[in-house]
Length: 213
Image (cartoon, rainbow, N blue to C red; front, side, top):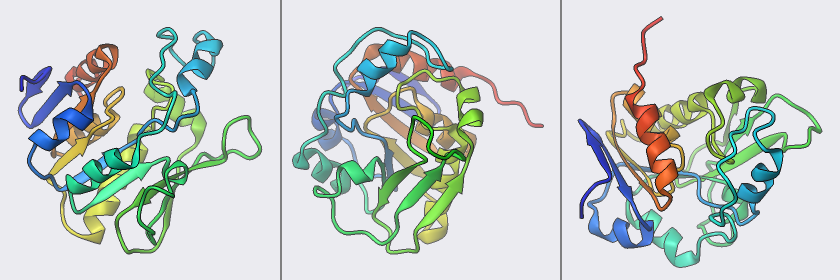
């Protein structure tokens, strides 16, 4: 199995995660944001690049949510998992105490006030406050892209619950936010995505230098 991209500690595979995950060893943490099945790609295309979004043409990657067998593959990949959009998959995942929420610092806006992540951790639920206006500054390369700071926070939260998560995998990589966050924190990471255009975007983000303040 040939990687699409490699650098020290980071590997990207282009393809279907259902085919690739069984070929990989277990990791410390699954951190991902699967398709919700709400046609977010088509909704983003209507904006034609407005409000911080970048338009990459209409696709069908968000036409359906993953099947139960796919979530089994995710949970088999690691003892620890954080899955954004967990409220869309609650019937396919085990009961959990440790939910996470991204508070967007907005109320009754056209988008949700907050977004939720299911986790495998038996721990108190926690909230990350990060205004949507700041999230746009990351550059909206993907219709459901999460802020880089939010994903860093989620990794560190997982560290506090169990152990330092040295190897992280994102089977629905999108624009590569999880990989970029892992790299910034000095972790190893694996990303998988079926769309080549998002693999290209992820590689570009990984190659960007981050200078200390």
